[in-house]
Length: 164
Image (tube, rainbow, N blue to C red; front, side, top):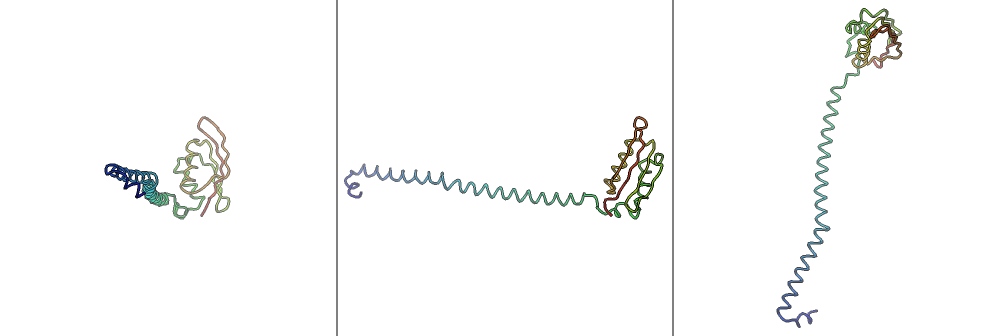
């Protein structure tokens, strides 16, 4: 190779050297752009994704804490004081403007109450039952509803505490 190079005239030698340098530069550029650059680009993208995922995790943790604070308390005693289920059903029906419709309230043990409403406004009765569930965790176990007039119903329901 050295003998061949020395046989070339000076101008050809310069051309071969410059061509060789350019060839090496092209090879380095191709290797860098095809193999090295994507590695660093993916590395940066991966670290950015990791930072974003960590920020999302922090946000989820904060949202979970807020949700726990907004969640209704599971203790019935703290929501209604020392009222028994019977007293709570009776007083809350009066607050829901159903006192005229309440015909009978009978306890069935400590955690169950049966109530009868006559000629009650349907919307008021349903809203009251929904309030009992959402605020006091009292569920309707059985219910019978008979329409007596447009918007008026007779209702019989067995209410039960879900926890105490």
